[in-house]
Length: 479
Image 1: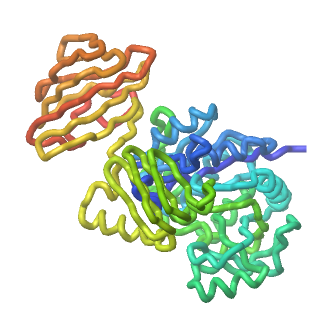
Image 2: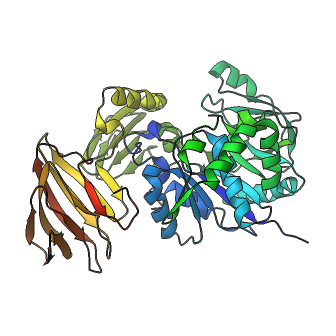
Image 3: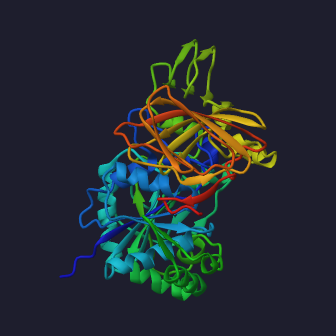
């Protein structure tokens, strides 16, 4: 008997704007550790929680260009090998993403069962989760398109709902035929829905055989299948990544998987999932899922409180003092502070939109920027100068480059720096420095076994990140 492999498809898109300022477009929530008890990111948790599934195959991750090195690094950190990372050249919603991943999965296995997961969900009871997935496998082998509906415990307006033809049981792992999908309701409608056992929250988790899925896509959304095939066939390999062809992929209809397929197919089933699921879509949800003290407070960082209750207090860099606070969200980073009523925390996304409209950089970008060689933190800047803290991992190096508008001065804090400057090579130890004149060809690398940390002072008529001309780059970035 042929045993179908299970291929995880992990969707890594999303800007995470509702958890600003910790989560931003340049480093959204799926790559951050939200839980103080574990130092692993939500993406890493997503992969680790399915490792005990039998016949699990190597995963396929789908992300955008900007986050590719974050995904690759975090997956290596948890010792996952032989993974694939597909790079979307443009966002086209979940239907094209799942389709192209299904086509990729068929390159590795004859007809795997696909398990589609979002990378930013929290699940408290992993045993129930795995048991439910195993029950779903049986339906997938019967050619069903399985989705998993969360048994509601409150009238949520932030989730879509699924209506089954028969009531769902929170104790019996039985799939039911889907009657309809409902968009996010208002509070009045949500209170009505949770009284009916036919309704569940739409988790966005799916399971099906790859060939059955592609047959349904060909039936209901043939253009998506056509352009996804073209984008994969004309893709290019780049280190650990596979870049989908932009011309083909951007012709895909911008549709969700529910709208394109699940609302039209007669093979759809919903299975009840009662495992402590949460999509962590607001700071209030983060507080609800956090371990709290006797006063109902979650506290992380350098924080002192008095007469404070039922609040979420997080400090990333500075001392935070709270007196007489109740039902508040307070999140401090080194370049922004959020103070919000806990019950109004869904409105954070509106603030992020306003920040982007006003072109305030803190709305999109962290002061800490991840690069394949390490990271840098912008400490202080003005229009003609900037000071950065640069961290280079052992045996890594930056691109060979030059700048048209700025000079740089490097001071080594810890570790050893190898500096290529025009035709010369120099080794710098701690407390040694070097000047990089405007227009000079240069490269920084770390030849040592510990991290290299240095202070970089930039000065010139323009100090933007796009003032880089690359001549060589080991990570495949554009020259």
